[in-house]
Amino acid sequence: MIHEQEQQQLIDNFSMTYGQDPDHLFFAPGRVNLIGEHTDYNGGFVFPAALTMGTYLAVKQTNDQTLHLVSANFNQQITCSINDLSYRKDDDWGNYPKGVLDFFYKQGLEFTGLKLYFYGNLPHGAGLSSSASIEMVTAFMATSLTGANYSKPELARACQQVENHYIGVNSGLMDQFAIGMGKQDHALFLNTHSLAYEHVPLHLGNYSLVITNSNKRRGLADSKYNERRSECEQGLSDLQASGLELTTLSDLSLEALSVNKDLFRSETIANRVAHVVRENDRVKRAVLLLKEGDLEGFGQLMADSHRSLAIDYEVTGAELDALFDIQIGAPGCIGTRMTGAGFGGCTISLVDQKSIDAFTSYVVPIYMKQTGLEPDFYVSTAGTGVSELSLNTERK
Image 1 (cartoon, one colour):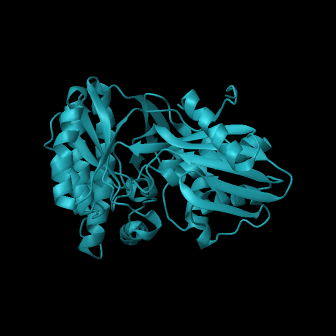
Image 2 (cartoon, rainbow, N blue to C red):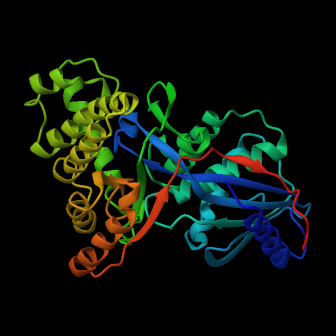
């Protein structure tokens, strides 16, 4: 969680910006997905963990019917009427909190005015869900201040609706759900169709999770994410047209995939479906292996996941594939894969704690030579979900 010094800095920054102290502080983590990629919008299984990095929000309520948005991470201040929260392209990052407030305003929550100050220590555009973190911290703030009775899964659903209909990205539910329901030192085994979930202890022994930011920026709304979702919808339609009674692609078993592999209108669609079905199976096996303490088996499934995302789903790209090829042979690494939507962003690797320095020293020069980009590394632990922070910090 946030350190006292950082919390004090957040209060000071708010006061310098607005000339007043905030009334409340909130935090929402980012998330990293250990395995189970591009399955969430297909009703499948995912295995994410909340991070200790995330988005902090300082708030003061006002009576001026105005929404003020400031972020330490973006050189843009946004002001608009609390009664007109419509999407504006020029508002850029501000559309995420605006969209969330617009959603709840239309649900009957009343705001007389808000001064908001955001600070995030997630690398922007790296696939660690900085946008979903902004959404969830705003949603938790809005419902907390108004006393609205929303559960964290309901907040996640609301923020997904904002992504889909306000921002225009057909994303699944995993990011927001993991950010809401994260638990310290646990990962979240989630069925995204039924929303049944289990907190699974992350017993990694002498290994750590190392996130590597490729520093190949990815903009989800501008990527081929929506195209992949459309292809999956076509695959489901092809199967349903043949008489198979399926609600989602994830209802299809490995055996049924093999029997019905010739039903798809193109090889591309068949490959997309194959990834989803096999990835669901990998997630279920990975959870069992982790519970059994078989970290090497878990790491092998991570590598298999990446290869499927590269070949069958085609969402990795040159930079992530370069990182994968380098890291799979790096000192102390027993598993690695891309994490997030792809087209840039991050990998997640399982690395022996004693070898982390050797791992990073090995990766950097080779990756820089191949791509001209310098990667950043974060040693990850699993943190807690969205919450309100105490304001009981002495003014210095």
